[in-house]
Image (cartoon, rainbow, N blue to C red; front, side, top):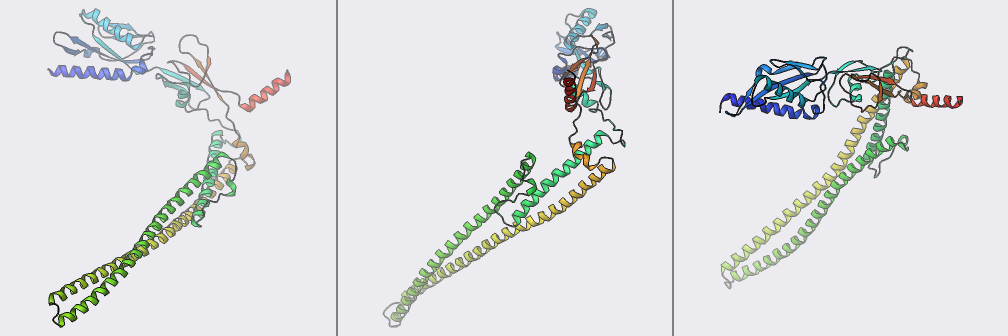
Length: 425
């Protein structure tokens, strides 16, 4: 098979994969002016079974405002408001008519750049942004930097700065609650308490406070249960060693009695051997038995000493484990105390910043209650009727659409408006 065949197959496969990858995005997209299209044409040579790439026709083409693209030899082809598949078929048929080929050339069209959409109104960065299939109103607003950061006349202190500082202040307050609860947990561990003491400041019905306490209590239970599990294992080992020592002591007593009996028997046999009543070999056999019994007794003594040593090590390990647990808790407690003081300093510094920038401490509660005005979204189509329509944040945009972001009335303002309307009825 020729190199040209392999190269053509590679090109065709690449086209097929790229077309499949973009299928979901472009299948339902109708081409609009300013769309950039990448066109690739190949021909199936039936007699040889080869694919031939038409390089002069390959390239990228921008759709004109009249909805046309201009190809070599073929000329202008209308593509406006047509599907990609329809354009592919139109290019292939036009090439077949111009060249007189028996087979329709295979044309592949890929959208490489979509037209723009326009975002204006109460956003941070109004302007034009490239469209892509599936682009929602909310995504377009995010591309434009989100809602507008407005400036407040008093001292140039912006709403965004207020919210950012209040968010940071709330974060410090939350962190302090977490640290205080952790300190209480560590104190309970260091004191060896069975239950964690809950700080009075967190004995509330607030969901976040209850969750903080729940998390630390779960950690306290897990750590104390793990410690108790290790201690129980050591206690079980101590009991086993004590039982082993008792058994060895009983065996040692039995062995001592057997040694004593064997020695007395040896003494009697030695007397009989002296009187020529028994042979010398009988005395030697008895001496060997006595030696073996004494060696067995010595082994029992050594085993008992080892068991007692292991028991002593186990008791020491239990004490060390308890001591290490308390030491770790006290060390972590010191670190938490330092972190609490550092967080308090940061919080107090932030409060001073809020005061310096013109926000009095008396207004902090009001800042926490700030409710941003809800955003409204209005779309003016890029083609067709030029009347703006109100949509939701999940509405999909089309190329050329103009998205106008407006600020509506907040809940408080709506209530005030409703009360005014009710008073004038």
